[in-house]
Image 1 (tube, rainbow, N blue to C red):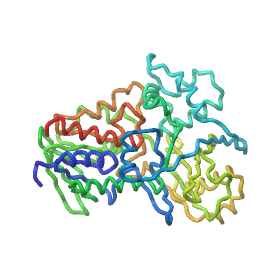
Image 2 (cartoon, one colour):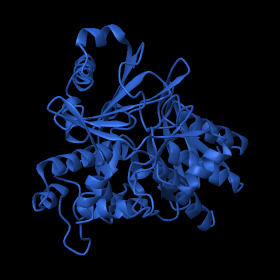
Image 3 (tube, helix red, strand yellow):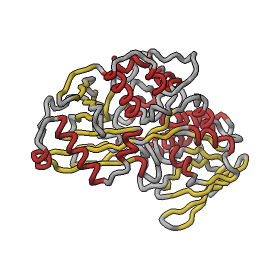
Image 4 (tube, rainbow, N blue to C red):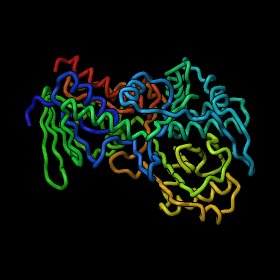
Length: 420
């Protein structure tokens, strides 16, 4: 392969966005993806015509780049109801989760010394219920450990869109994977050569030259380019399953310092609806091991979500134990007999992102005193290695699809500005 190529390593939304941006600028691009599919943490399965989202599910806020791509692909969206219920002591109570979260987050003062969210919250005079609700939010939405995530990072993420701090959410009607399909189509039309099932193990580099080697379906492969966009998940970088020569010494502190939280999703598919209203929004059950639940008007399903330390604990269980736990919690929340629930059950879909070997977790977050780590990870090396992915994002919510997408576009523009 000629050294005129630009290699993009990692076929998630960040890598796809970078590849398309570069190819549109008439660059010769090779996209290398370890698995049989593109999309990374966007993972949609089908239960008949119904999309089942095992990874990213929601569009958060009004990201121009993401909405532009959705319009370009003529992908319809549906708005998610902004309704929340707290389940405690066997009863459901309406609440405004965003009000609870915002009243706590607005107490964070970025001008003071950084501290963990848990330490910060312990000093605040809120009710115990509010503290537990917002802790559950940080663990779930940020996939974070409250004892490790820094309040400065939380405050910076909350400033990404002052007019839309998160209340307005949408789904891609036919599933998030349709967004990946549009990107893949555009990449191919622009001339990107996509290599799936290609596991890169070593990257040798020097200024103006990159040599990547690995295996494809058991056979050795190699690729040469004069630059590379590294769009690998933080979990892969942390695992050191891809070796860089010379080592990424300037990146090691950022890779080691940034945290990578876990998420487990459990989707229960039923024969008929037994909850009311059908699209009730969200239930937060702070006393349960799977604490966040929601409805989906596209199918007869209930989704359970657990992130952070609770996900780490649940990850120790077998898949059968996780499924049994989910059914037991759903029966309790929706006040139905467990035997009836099992009779109505069609299928259970679940995914533990920590156990996904080509991801290693769900979402990055910034620890105490780690505000510069995403920028350090994003910085290019000798105008040869450029870095993309949600962990490189410092000015928006880590872990979001639009953050990853924007990072890919940013990395591609850095390649183009470098004159390569």
